[in-house]
Length: 292
Image 1 (cartoon, rainbow, N blue to C red):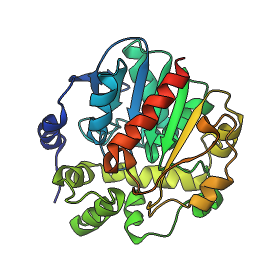
Image 2: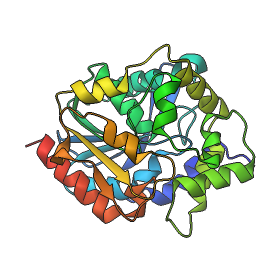
Image 3: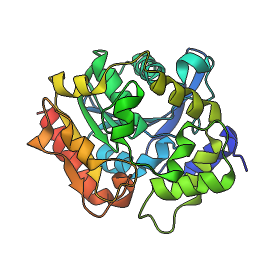
Image 4: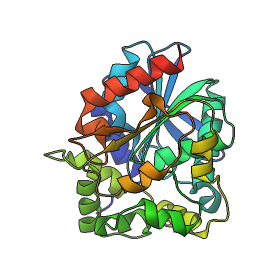
C-alpha cells in the first residue's frame, strides 16, 4: 500500500488548526512549509525519518499562541514536499540541512531555534556544525553520532522495526510495525502517521542510510555537541526502543540546557506527541532562555 504526496497533503489539513501551509521552491524541490504565529523569535521544527511536519501539531499551536514564529517543514520525499531532484545529494543529512537553510533564506528567516526529532535532530546538529544562523538547538530521539558505522552501532539499540529506516522497499506490515515502534505509547495510533511512512520515498531512506554508514561526509556530531557554544537542549523518552540512553549519557554537550538530559519518563521515541504538555513546557523554558 502506498500513499501519494497529494493524498497525504489532503489528510494533513485536519491537523492544521493554526496557520497555513505554503510551498517554497528551492533546488528543484517544492517544499511544504507550515507556518503559524509571528515575530522575530522563531522556532523551526524538523521531523524524523518516514514522518512529516504534522507530528508537531501540538507544538505549532502552543508555541505560536505563546508569541513565537513557528515553522514546520516536510523534508524532501516526505509529506507534502516533492521527492528529491537529486537523490544522491539531497537525501543525505548534509543535503537536508542545506535545503532547509535555503528554504529559510527564501523566507528571510534568521536567528532561529531548531527543534529536531530523530533524523531531524541529526539535521539540526549538521546545521549547527556548518555554522548556520541558529540561536539554539533542541534535539530529542537523537543521539549525536557518526558519520561512519562505529558510533552509529553504539548509539542505537537493535530493534527489528528499525530496519525500515534504511530500506528502499518495505512491506505495509513493516511500515505499520515501524510506526507503532516510533510512536510508542500512542493508543490508538493515528492512521495518518502510518500513511506518512507509506508516503515516504524509499530511495530517501536507502540513500541516507548508505551515506551515514559510508562516513565520507557530514559533521562529526559528537564534536559539534561538545564544541557548539550556543544553548542545546536534549530530550529522551525513557521508553524509547531505538536510542541507547547509556550512549546518550556518554556524549559531552558543551552548553547543555539545565545541565542535564531531560528524560520524559512515560514516553517513547516521540515525547512531543506522547506527553505534549510536559514537552511543551520544556520547549517553552528553553525558548525563553535562548531569547532572553
